[in-house]
Every structure is written in structure tokens, then in C-alpha cells.
Figure 1: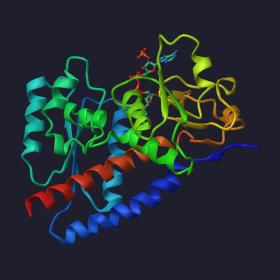
Figure 2 (figure 1 turned 30 degrees about the horizontal axis):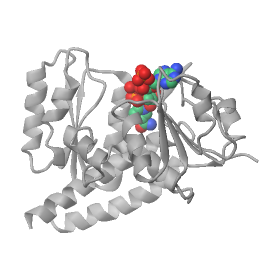
Figure 3 (figure 1 turned 180 degrees about the horizontal axis):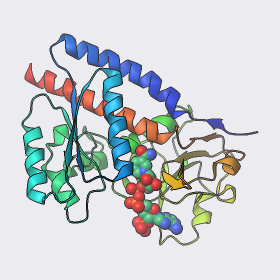
Figure 4 (figure 1 turned 90 degrees about the horizontal axis):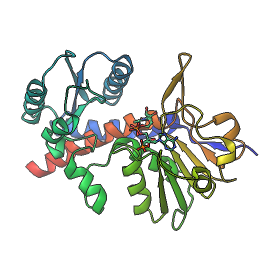
Length: 285
Ligand code: NDP
């Protein structure tokens, strides 16, 4: 029997309806949640992501602003834009679209964002909260992926979870969230020996590698929940890291690409922004 599909579009539509209600409630109290996205240069994929973020804001009644900076923007100019947004009361969430041009220092730029406006959850303070399990902003992609895993209703206690990929924005925070859910977590990466030995044990398998079709059916335990974070372009078509057609015959649940984790990532970004506006209002009262 084939796997059930974890449909990011359906889940996002439900969540965005709830978000729109929270936005309306905030507006009644005189606050419109605002998201600012800084885009440096003109990477076509980044431009699409930024446009989709703007559309998500529009759909839920939020205010959005995109700051387009030229490719040759200096670190000082970038940081000065961030500081302006930090001080702007109309902006509750700030996001710097990654990757940035090579001459810019991503970590230094992210560190300039006020942690309470860091809706991507990449600031070291928020990364620290994630590590310790204390209150903070949770990175959007792993948060969306966890939401999808939990929507299966499977009891995560003691489950074997394997995350392929150890980036700061996906792999590591994903592993941390699964650990918080009491999974036994293994993180695999390019130096992992016998990768298949690990992945075949996984009740929950998350692929965040960036290689089309990397996870094949022989790597998957029958009945596993398979979460495909990858976004790759092959012959102009978007596909994930998982060989969807074959793996879906073996897994119990699977996310498609497109229409899976990517859609949920933007929904979680909207949610983090509304949450930031709510926290800000409650702090001010
Ligand atoms: P990175 O390139 O930063 O990380 C990729 C990871 O995969 C690294 O940890 C790398 O290991 C590991 N890896 C590479 N080759 C192998 C291999 N042969 N065996 C095992 N591990 C391997 O990518 P990101 O984490 O930023 O993104 C991963 C994917 O997710 C990309 O396709 C990206 O586009 C997508 N993405 C999707 C999002 C969404 O909204 N759905 C959001 C963000 C990213 P090592 O560390 O050793 O190099």
C-alpha cells in the first residue's frame, strides 16, 4: 500500500486561515503585523521565495515590505538597513534572504537583527533557545517539518529519527526539535559512514541534503515517515531529495515537493511574525 501524503498546501491553508484571524484581532487593537524582507542581489530562486513571502502576507492581511539591495551592497550598508528596521515600529519581523553574495558576512548580519524580530530564528540567541528548549523563535523550515510529522498522530516518544544534513538552518535545528519530542536522533552528513545503515533504522527520516533523488527506496524502513526538505531544480522542474515515486510505495507518510515542507516554511514564517507582533503588544501593555 502506498504512503499517505502530507499535503503542505492543505495544512498551510488551514493554518493561514487561523493566522488571518489572529491578524484581524491584532488590527482591532491597532496593530498590523509587519514583515520586512531584505534581498541582496538578484538570485532568481531567492526572488521567487521573497515574492511568495509577500503573497503570504497579503493573503493573511499582514503588511510586508521588501528591501531590494544591489549585489555590490557593503556589509555596513546592509547592517544599517537592518538597524533601521530594528527601530521601525511597523516592522515585527525581519528576514535577510539567504544565501547572500559571497562578500557579505551572513552571521554578522543575522546577529544585528533584534532577537525578538528575528522571525527566521537564525539569531544566536534564538538558536540558543532552541538548544535549551526555552522560549524563543523556532526556525521556520524545521518547525514546519515537525508540524507535518506531528500531524500524522504518531507517538514520537522513543522513535528513531534520522536527519540527513547538518546545516544551521535546517539539519541541526530539525534534530534538536526531534530530540525535544523524545526521539532518539541521529544526524548524518557527507562524512557519515554507511549512511544506509542509519537511514534504514529510521522511523522518521528527514532529508535536507540538496541533491535530487538522493534518498532511494532501499534506504527507507518500511512504514517510515519521510520528510523531504530538499528543493532542487532538474531540467527546470522543482524536485526534492527523495525519490518520491519509489519511496512512497514503502513509507507510511511522505511529503511531496513541491507542495510540502516549502509551503509550510512560509506559513511558519507568517506565524512567527504574528507571534512577534502579539508578544510586542503584550509587552507594551
Ligand atoms: P546545506 O548545503 O547547507 O547542507 C546540506 C547538508 O547535506 C550538509 O550537512 C551536507 O553534509 C549534507 N550532505 C551533502 N552530501 C551528502 C551526502 N552524500 N551524504 C550525506 N549528507 C550529505 O543545505 P541546507 O541545509 O541549507 O538545505 C538543504 C536542502 O533543503 C536544499 O535543497 C535547500 O534548497 C532545501 N531547503 C528547503 C527549504 C524549504 O523551505 N523547504 C528551506 C531551506 C533549505 P556536510 O555538512 O558534511 O557538508
